[in-house]
Length: 345
Image 1 (cartoon, rainbow, N blue to C red):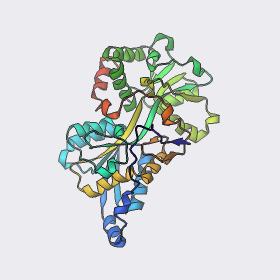
Image 2: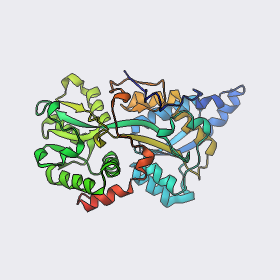
Image 3: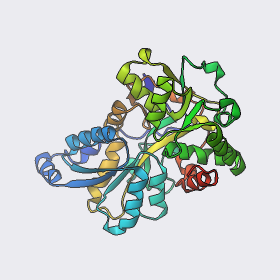
């Protein structure tokens, strides 16, 4: 079992109050009836299965219905920006943090309630209280165990962008997490090193349209390695059994950008038509019940203490990730600029 122990110095242990507690009180029948007449609109860029699980648990706890509108996180964020105050969205749930940060930077997100923010360590939420991380994942290297041994893998993700790895590494330039990795390298190593890395990947690597496509290419022996998020491999292992796979994952560690931790995140729109219910949804998402619904549905790390993942994730404290937060990554806009300069976009 992987525990949500994110480091002793990082956690603020909040209360375990569930979002439904305010709804199911002494006058529960009347309040439940009122809740059932409410419907929230959720713009969702997170994986459909995960969001469906969280929403189902939330509705069961509160009686509040949620209309889920699925799409790509960055596209939904752009849609909200275009819609402005006319947006029907009450809540935005993103697979990556930069699209949520982009909305916060434009003043489109409301401050979250203190009791919600207390559930998550400050490191994993906005400094201005407008959004919070919901779950975390790690960047890893997937490799074909019949083509390469783990001791042949380089110490840094930067080393993959060299002639020694020509035709041996897959990457997904359209992936939000890959673009967050670009920003991390820029922060840690500088712009010149970042452009050199991207140019090297273009010259020696193989582009794929999706992380699962890249992973399946590794699994089939089409290519030796791929730069992906860890949960894609766990999804494949859950489907077929890890003992039946030809691939495994390698955690780079050493505070290298190859071990970057990225977040899914959510916020409430300032223009929310159902503000009280929207705040309840965010509160539920970081509650024990909400976090358990997330990690039961996808191999991601909970951000709340005391919640366990059923997946055999590497303990979070052993990832040795770089000291870069979602707030540090910002809205990720510079990643596209760097990709264009390197000829990848």
